[in-house]
Amino acid sequence: MNHKKCTYGDFLKSGEGIATNILASRLQLLEENDLIEKLDHPDSKAKVLYQLTNKGIDLLPILVEIHLWAEKYFDIPKDLKDRMKAVKKDKETVVRALMKDLKKELTSTTEKD
Image 1: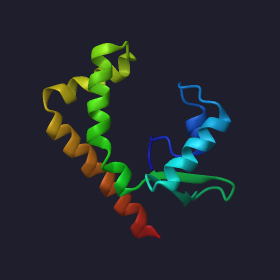
Image 2: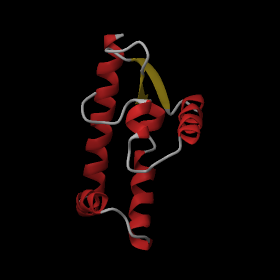
Image 3: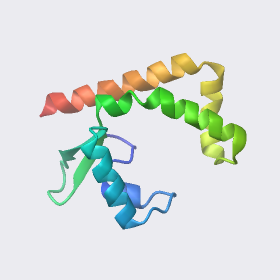
Image 4: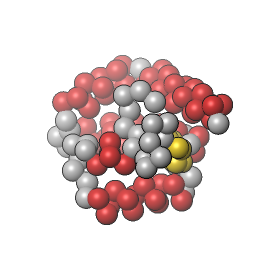
């Protein structure tokens, strides 16, 4: 799992500035609803990795639509705006490629277990 945010600490350090109790609650809710799963951290027994499940990955097209809507009505960060340019050019291809990459990553992780 390369540059992605995968641990509680990674999420906590994110620019969103989410409070620890809210982060813990949301991660638990996502896990209870099978959108993410916990994996053992390869470097530390004190940490876990969070990974999207197939159910979570299947939400990607909906999240892309929400981002497109948000860009229309709100100021969004420049980096997100830049990423949305590719989506606007060819949404289906971008979404399909992202989902394929996420599912490939999920498969490679589950094969290691």
